[in-house]
Amino acid sequence: MGWQGRMAIVTTSRRTLAGAVAAAAVASALLATIAARSGATAQPSLTVRVPPPATDRIYGSPLARGRPIVVIDAGHGGRDPGARSVSGDIAEKDLTLALAGELRDDLVKRGRVRVAMTRDDDRYLTLEDRAAVARRLNAAMFVSLHMDSAPNALARGASVYSLSDIASDAEAAHFAATQNAGAVADGPGSSVQAILSDLAMRTQMSASADLASRLVNKSAGRFELRPQPHRFAAFHVLRRAATPAVLFEAGYISNADDEVLLRDTAHRSAIALALAQAIEADVAARSRH
Ligand SMILES: [Zn+2]
Image (cartoon, rainbow, N blue to C red):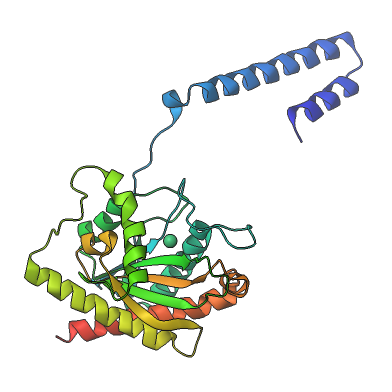
């Protein structure tokens, strides 16, 4: 009920002069409150606090204490909605956040790794904000989640991109260039220059490729993959994460069938489980070296 409804009850339930005065007082108090609120919204700079750009909160079961940290990056957010679905009903940023939350919960429940998220709500982050979370936490890996979209309405299936100097194909090169475009405006220190030595960069690239193959292997037979599902390109956000890093495209929201699947919790659970198993296998394999 709004304030008009409340005023109506007050004025009809009071019949005496005193009651009418009381009603008028309530009405003026309500009007004063409304005036104060609209005054506050007219000058948001006085009251709005800017939240930290990204979160360093670590999720984990007590048993996972000291275990490697996996950073899950829900693509897009806030004023960057990402692609819009073919039905027009949902944006990429909402589906990436849903899948990121489901993957986090799976990993935490299974207890073999700890998890951090670049965002756990609808907020805008630069690519550098995202990569910086992995560096600050000295993360064991960085997994960025996206939903694909293409002019060809028939294109469907999931794919994984890993970091490389040389793109696997023209489409991957174009995709990385589009992703990297936002990084130019990110501010100082965010250009695509390497922050690691050449040797460290080679190691990061080959470990990223291993992680991507594991993701493909665990996904195969559980949900549809694109032809040649593992692709390579020079992604700014993956390079700057300074740890094995992949970009996972869960399917095409530009395809009507994929959109239905990606909006379905059961389908996303199957994806989250495959990702969780691949992540754990990768952490286990690297801890044996
Ligand atoms: Zn995206």
